[in-house]
Length: 297
Image (cartoon, rainbow, N blue to C red; front, side, top):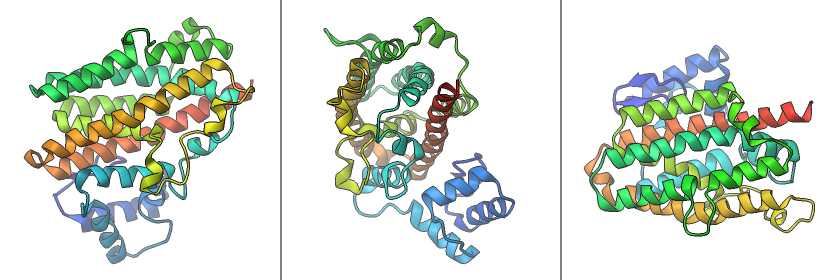
């Protein structure tokens, strides 16, 4: 069974014609979310049903490189390619309001992240998978050795930017963040461990510094920010730590997925990734929206 990444509509496996019809009908009705997904993932050009069906079939085709490269290539195209996500463009120069919005919305992302990692552990007995997820939980939420956890670096950044962490705790996440968290909860509750892993750890590709090898045209953020005297130290620490860790984490997760994927439904793994990537797209928009709220104060 295949799933629409935007609205969770279900289709028979391999029924790309019905899926194409679904997207075309909603695009003709000017459904903004489906149109946006088509533009970012398929094409900005208008296509008839035959052309769109072929484009969808090609989109799902796993050719050379297997599931690992398929996920990387799809992620690059959607977030860091020729037409990058608008949040990536915002991150090409330092903006205090954007980073404040980042701090608030990302706090809620991380709370869901560790829950997702723990559910992966509960759904498999594979030692390498469990060790990997335990490492993630430690680095994100508890720290290792003298290293502070990512969530603490995030909160310290928020404080240096002028917010109290109690204020961050008490803030209601924006609707797009709520939607994304709801989608990730749905994936973790209904999917097997490998699908959850594909859904969650593929998102770490956003900060992977090696994606230029896969055609990325933009860095996650302008690396010059790490040396700029205009950028607060806490911002540098937070961005720099993620830039280093997500490189190894994202590829390690994809290697694990590639190792075990042949024992599972490949289309299910693809669908889980696509549903999560769509949620991530919406969540990045929430970071921008929150930043605009600070800018307009």
